[in-house]
Amino acid sequence: MELNPNRFMETAVIALEDIRLQSALERATGNADGRRRQMLAELDGPDALRLQGRAARLRAMADLPDLLEQVERQVTANNGHVLWAVDGDEANRHVLDICQKHNLKRGVKSKSMATEEIGLLPVLEKAGITMLETDLGEYIVQLSGSHPSHIIMPVMHMTKDQVGDLFEEKLGMPPTDEAADMTAFARQTLREEFLAADFGMSGGNFIIAETGTLVIVTNEGNGRLSTGMPPVHIAVVGIEKIIPTWEDFATLIQLLPRSATGQRMSVYTNMINGPARDGEPDGPQAFYLILLDNGRSDVYASEYAEALACIRCGACLNACPVYQNIGGHAYGSVYSGPIGAVLTPLLKGKENASLLPFASSLCGACQAACPVMINLPDMLLKLRRDLQTEQEPMWRFGLKAWAFGMQHPLLFEIGGKAASAATRMMAETTGSGHLERLPYPLSGWTDHRDFPPFAGQSFHDWWRKNRGS
Image 1 (cartoon, rainbow, N blue to C red):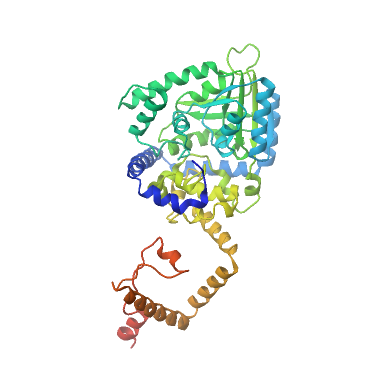
Image 2 (spheres, rainbow, N blue to C red):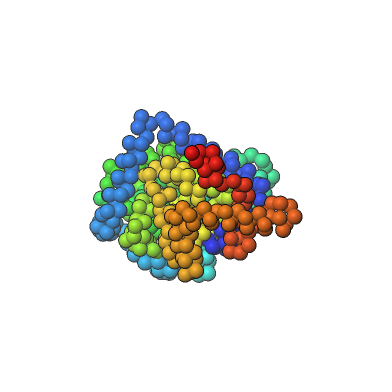
């Protein structure tokens, strides 16, 4: 499946007509958003905690360059290695160089959006290196040859029956309708892979600057097995994941599981300080931390820097009416939903994702759900503004002419009467008395929306007739 944000209109229409997808989305997003609300309601002051979490993330953004240098010093002092990657290609080269240095051929990987973002798996496959996803959702996605459709729940787009059919086809699982049986079968299959792997990979939910600690939050234990059992651990983490102190972590770890999966606490919270030390029986012999930029510095220097405060909980996706109806694949990007509609144009270039900022009703549900209160509606509006200023001269002239007419009452009234008369005449030519499609370039509106007929009498005319005296 090819990811292409500029095919959003086409893929969204396909998603809306997919009955099984609609069933899966309705159940999954409703349950996830309901659990989030329930868990936050248990707190005495959920908004106070969200404000503390927001302050922690914004403080990290303000001091990001210094915190990154602090992380490098701490990880190096802990006998780890820090590598910097300006883009995805450099990050992939770092991984390949590490594999060559240690003669690594078989890896297991914990869930990581950063490695999805840089397209790591095809690069490893081309180099003859086997890499297996070990998060259950990511494992299902890998088996299906697809892409994750959600930041936290990669197979939100699939039903239980689809997963069962996939396991029967790809893994030879005996037929079953029980989710627990499917999970047990996958667990047994993956356990052998953990034992055979010569290196493990992960992303990172947070990096705590004061100690250089990498934190991975999971529910399945695969994160601990992927990072602790193989002799080499490679972590690819976006530079925005830095937080200053353990006190900040104590705040954010209360928000992340509640917002992501509706839990008070995730099952596993793994804290990694580098390779195993002398006398420690567990842990890798070598630890590499690859700090990924890939456009983040440009976002950091822009008016959209607040988008980097995202903690990747997926709450805005579950609350968004657009995502609830079309799912994640329609966005054509690793990052979907409201945060994806902001991040994808910023990271990939606005011209490569020009439709995504318009994939929103601007209802504000995303900001209301965000645990760190990122102002996503405002950023979506600003991106729309940026895209409009970059339009062709003809469109810019048209918008200025429209604005001029809207600001002058006489022109506004004349324009309304002319539009009403013109559309009535066009409707009469159809023979049905109803106009379903406007001519180009106005067809861009009616291609995707209903066109209600103009009222027989304008409000201004009614007012003059009934209240003019």
